[in-house]
Image 1 (cartoon, helix red, strand yellow):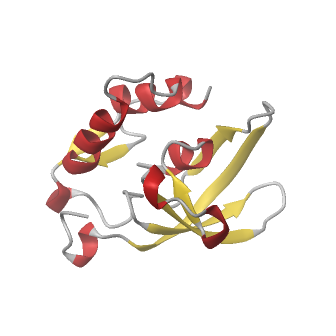
Image 2: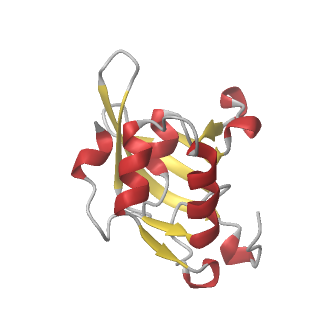
Length: 136
């Protein structure tokens, strides 16, 4: 699993994202990788999160390491997911692999078939908090 190698300092979440993700998983059985991410992430007030961190609704450019193919994605909540438009659910392996990473970091996740994928976060192109939006 992805998050078994996550340690403090590798992932940063805003307080709001953390609370919303906990609520999203309350009463259910969150994917183990998300539970591990919530346990291990550094949590900061939204105004203190650096602009190069992947937060909810941040637009990021990633590069698939094996193929060097680049794409733009937005990590969102499940109700807003539209994979064909680049909106990836935070509950998906890719979403959990990206959330909280810093530009330059490598995201790792497993496909439903068990294969490991890796991609580098090339840049955080837009982050709500960096633009002054602390409530999205």
